[in-house]
Image (tube, rainbow, N blue to C red):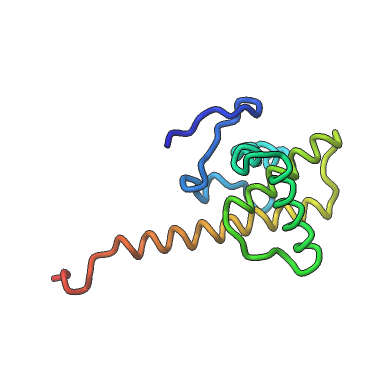
Length: 133
């Protein structure tokens, strides 16, 4: 699927199955970088409503505060990042330090998920030992 401009300020949408390590801001990313990247995914569209998007994002954020970031899928993690972007835009201010730590954890978790996916795809594309000469 080609990457298409989003309804969010003409940011290009990146489908989760096409998301690559290089697309994700670094661990030192500032709010501007995170803000722009968050809009490469539309949580409202993915889940069909604001309410479902909010429920997923808020549940994961609550679990993060209680026990650390739960293991979850890439779309759910991207939903959290997207929803935090929308939340802080609504507040009309930059996120506080605690939220920035959370956002950096989300980005790190995305990199882990993509790393596992890439490793799995690499291993699946290796020739069988029997076929080797």
